[in-house]
Image 1 (cartoon, rainbow, N blue to C red):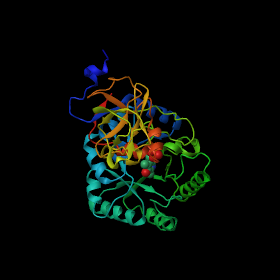
Image 2 (cartoon, protein in one colour):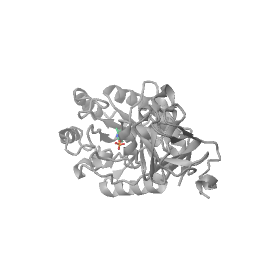
Image 3 (cartoon, rainbow, N blue to C red):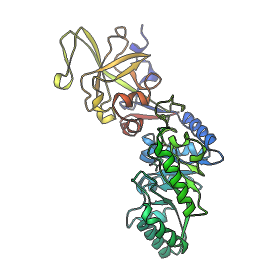
Image 4 (tube, protein in one colour):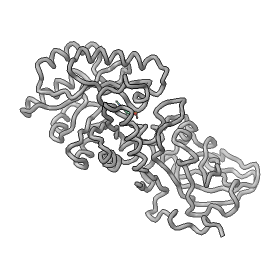
Length: 375
Ligand SMILES: *Cc1c(COP(=O)(O)O)cnc(C)c1O
C-alpha cells in the first residue's frame, strides 16, 4: 500500500495549521558565515526587518547572535522596540527608516540606535540627547543616488557644521544604500561608491557601512567596515543572472485538503476560468493569496510532490489553490498529504519569477497560518 495514502504520521500537521514553513537555522548560520568571510576584515550585520523577511526575527536574530552577529537592522522603530528585550545587550539594533517626531524618547530609553536621514532628524535627536543629559549614539545615512532615504547633498554642509559642535551625538558610522546592487554591470554602483567616498572625505574619521547582499558580491571596495545583508542570509539570490551561491533556508509544504477526479469539460475554480480538456485528477491545497501565493500564479505555476510537477489550474483563491495531480499514480495524494510549494524542486526565485516579482516579496508575504518549524 502507498505510504502517502496511509497519512505517514510525521508528515501530519497536528496543530491545525495549513502547512509547514520549515526554516533551516543551520543553513542561515552557514549563509551568515559565508558572507562574513567574504567581507572580512569588515563585519557583517544582519537585516531583520519585516520579521526577518517573514522568517521570524527572534529565532533568526538569536541564531545569528550565536554566529557572532552583533548588529541588526530593522526598518521601523516598532520592530526594534519589540526585538530589543528579546536580545542580549551586546547586540545593537538600528532603525533604517529613522525616527518620526516625538518617538525619540522611546528610542533613546530602549537603547535603540536610529539611522538619521536628514538634518531635521539630527537636530531632534540632538535635542533629545540634551534633554536627557546624555550622549546618544546614531548612524548617519546619506543619499548617494537612490532618492529614497538619507541626508540629501544640499544638507551636507549644514550637517557637517552642526557635527563640529558635537550636538551630544556620537556618530557610530555613516551609511548609504545601493539601488542596483544585484546588477553587477550597472554603472550606478560605481557612481554611488564614488559618492560615498566623497561623503566620507567630508566627514573625516567616520567609517562606512554600505553593502547590502548584492553589494557584498560587488567586491571589497563596497564592504566598508560593516555590510548589511538581508536576502542572501535567507537563501535568496543576491545577484541577478548568476547561479545563487547561497544555501536555501526555507521550505514550504502545504496540506492537501481534498482530491477528486473530474471528466473532460469540467470548470475549475472561481469564474470557471479553467476547463479540463480530459479526465483529470485534482487536489485542493490549503494555501491561497491570503497565505502569500500571489493571485497571478493562477494557471502560471505549480507545486511538487516527490519531484513531480503539479500545475496550478484555475484561479488562486484566498485560502486554497487547485492543482492537477493526474501525473501522479492514483491514490498517491490524499487528505492530509503534503505537497512542496518551496523546496528542492521550486526555489524562491522560481516562484517569484512565475509571479512576476522578486524573492523578497514572496518571502515577506509568506502567511501567518503556516506552522513555522525551526531546524
Ligand atoms: C533592506 C535593506 C538592506 C538589505 O538588503 P538585501 O538586498 O536584502 O541584502 C540593506 N540596507 C538597507 C538600507 C535596506 O533597506
